[in-house]
Image 1: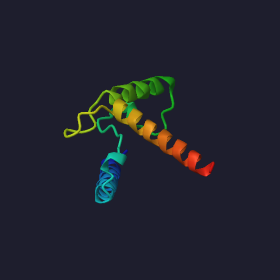
Image 2 (image 1 turned 90 degrees about the vertical axis):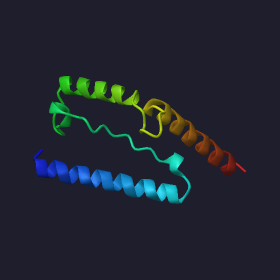
Image 3 (image 1 turned 60 degrees about the vertical axis):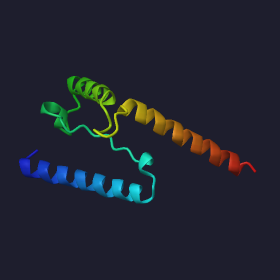
Image 4 (image 1 turned 90 degrees about the horizontal axis):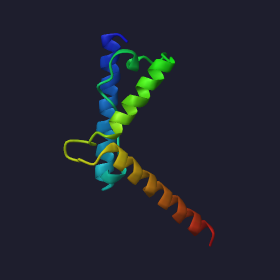
Length: 103
């Protein structure tokens, strides 16, 4: 990608995160918002069209490393723990809706 395209893409990503986190905070639901994003990709990992086996293995490793990172400086919960918490929350809500629908 050209530097201008990268800058435009990054700015859009940061603004989306800012607006969404602000909305969730305003609704007192900040614990229901989690953005998972790796900002330190380099080399072939940044190419959208590289589906080579080597790059797929690299991207899996990037994802596994990301799971071990803290969500933020303020929240030391790892992405792995946060994603499991989200999965449980969604599962519990689905079960609750299914129970209400059966009445």
